[in-house]
Image 1 (cartoon, rainbow, N blue to C red):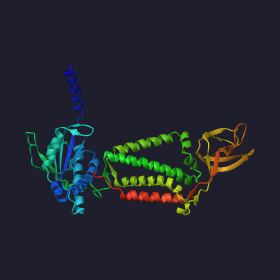
Image 2 (tube, one colour):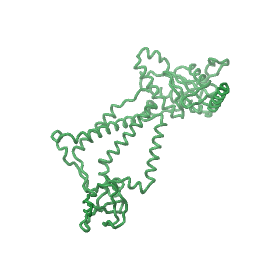
Image 3 (tube, rainbow, N blue to C red):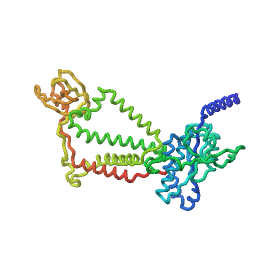
Length: 432
């Protein structure tokens, strides 16, 4: 019974492995004389050299539809579905490094590249099989600045525009037959790399993707607070968008496609962040700066109001106020009527905290009514105060005021801006 179970597991595993076998092209790179560089310059400079190497080459693998499978010391192992893409990526790598060498006489990186095509066992995070072993042996036959490829890769090429020189044949370790090699004349290929080789696009790891998501959510939170406390009141002076700006939930209830669209956009952004392998350096810096700015904004929004005014001159002085008055709802389920009468049709209700733009005021039978803008040229009426009646006390339903920005708010915004600049300027990428 036990033997039968083991055999069943073995057969099942063998089937899964067999189903994951695909023809792939494996590319290996290796930095020439890296050991001597580490010995001469020390661990820190050696690690910086490898990081610079990765930041130049990783985006090029991605650009030509490849995937970095792993790094082994100062070597890269990448996988491509098409042999043409692997050759183009290799040419772009050598061109990019040549650009760096021309612009920086002290640039230390010179790589050899080996490419081989064959069947491999392709799993989610790795590739196994003879194709990997042979590709590594092909790379060992190349010299710094060379691209060596096996006869299998050369036969798999569909493009005829590549130029080759004959390389020395060799017997790969563990094999019996010689393998013919070709050397790609990459120097004669048109430029595949434009601009700086060390472009603003940098590779990111899984940990850094989580960091990017954290910064994105922080940016959304900060943006929501900034919108809630300041921006929506400035925009509310524009009557055409005030209803949506002050009460987006009300509009979204009427137009369900708006929240659905927002949700789909959020899912798409999340998907893209999880799938992306390179990202502009400036995006990292912007997100970090935004995170610091948001932290400063929240912190000082709580702290500054507690500081005595003698320590903050004119902190309570009004800096700006809106042109329009804004009606704020004080109770949940407050009804808004079609006419200034509680016997007219209820158009909708708002909970406490809801805001509407005031357009007119009318007193009917000693009850003051506020006329508010619902949407362009559509209005509703709401009571200011519900008068006392049998068993029910007088209740204030809404409060009307203009929005003010105080000098204290300006201090908070300036500190937040300084926080953004500090986070943006001081951000550094982790070694890759």
